[in-house]
Structure formats: structure tokens, C-alpha cells
Image 1 (cartoon, rainbow, N blue to C red):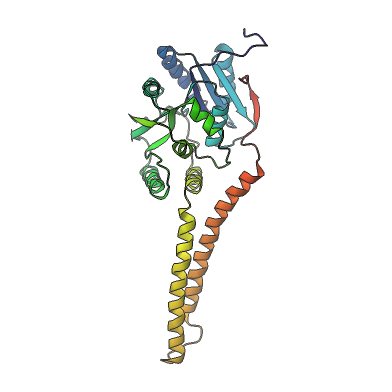
Image 2: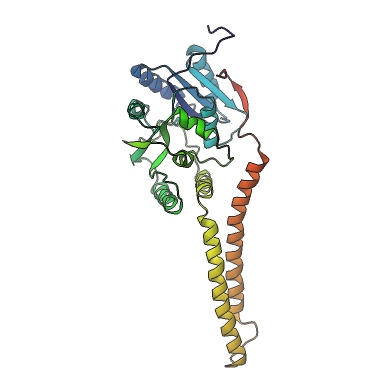
Length: 319
């Protein structure tokens, strides 16, 4: 047993796993992760972050921690979301290198040694790039493909396409992420923004092992909005451009209206085009206000400086 006045040794590798209602996958994930890291022969810790699960996920993880001293758990006070759960794990990870992996086993733990070897060859970030995504609907594949390419086109940060959060990062990247406490987290964008030497390993993604995904279309949309607003001012520029365009169209309509009234005398009270122009301009204005509101809302959340998450229980001792 570790004496109370000493801290546990620093592991070479930390593996951060966010969990939300993953009782069907916890044991299989643990067994595969342990087989991988023990085969690598490196000191390690497994950090499971329970993000407000409503099933027996937490109890299963706690049971694992009782029999395996390398298992750490963080139980958040409520569901804060995937990106915040990963952030909590990164904040408490002590390893010289940190792996981020989801619990659904779509991202294979067996790829970790290749990611680790690539990191040791001189990189600070090695992300896993998907070659295929079986089991996902055509609509999800299409929207994901569209989002990644649109984000790459409108941002000044080179965010790799066809990637998720499955990656390995060096300790210096973890420390840099701690300096970026914004509320609307988009970690893959933040890691790209940080820079350093980055590369990738390609793989074929598997189908979800069990349970149901917590990433609904609404959550995916929210993540997409967070990514765009965090790394691009293009929507604001688009709103301004739309304003100029609508103003130009409105000016032409005004000239035509004056000509119809005083020139051709072909004028009818309650002209339908007046209503069309009003609705058109009103719609564009509401869209522009909504876009500006998204940015202001994020600024407001950051100014309040509330903690990103609250921890209900953990077995991690601070290093």
C-alpha cells in the first residue's frame, strides 16, 4: 500500500475513457485495454470518467478499481458532455503520454501500441484517421463528411478530416490544453491549434460493441456549432455579407417601386412584393442576430468563469 505521505509513481501512459451509460462495454473495454498495455510493458493508469451515467457504469468501474490499482475513476456530479468528461480526465492524467479513447470499442485499443510507437519516434500528437465507418447510417456519414470539410475550409486551423478524439498526446500538449479553459470545448480543434509535430495512423473503425450511442444528432449539431464558433469568424462575415446583399436588393426594389409609382403609374396599393421584401429582409436579420447571439453566448459563458465540471467522487490522488 502506498504510504499516506508519498505520491504514487508517475506512469508512462495514461488512458482516458469518458463513460456515459456504457455498462454493456466496461468489462470488455477493460480487458482489451489491460491486454494491450501489459503487452507494451509500460507503467500505466486507466482513467474512467463517469459522465452522469444512469445505469450501473459507475459501480462496475469502482469494482474494477478495487481489484486493479491502475484503475482510476472520476464520477462527475452530472452529465457535462463528452468533451468536458475528456477534459476532466486530461486534467487528472499523470502520464508522460495520454491516450483518449471512447468506451464503445469502435476505436480499437489494439491500435494504441502503434500510436505510442509513432509518438516515441518524435511526434507530440498522433491521431487515428478513419478509413471506414461500418454500421453508421448514410445520413450520419454524409453530415460528418460535410462538417469536417466545411470546417477545414472556413477555419485557419488545420483540423484533420475523418478523425475523432481517438489519439495519443504528449504531456506538453496536455499542459497546453489546461491553459485553454473555454466552456465550449472542441478538443480536436484545440489540439490542432496548439501545434507541435502531428501525424496520424490509419485504421478501419468497428461497429459499436454494445449499448446505444449517447451522441444524438442534436449533440452532434452542438459539437459542430462549438467547433465552428471556436475556430472561425466566417459565420459573422457571412452575416455581414448577407446584410450588404439584402441591402442592395432592397435598394433595387425601392428604385423599381418609385419608378412604378411615379413613372409608369402601374402601381397597386398593398403590392405583394413589399411583403416579400419585408419577410426576406426580416429573415436574414434574424439569422444574423442568431449567429451573433451564438458568439455572445460563448463569450458570456467564459466571462462567468464557472468550473467546467464538478466531481462527486474519485480515487485519484493529486500529483
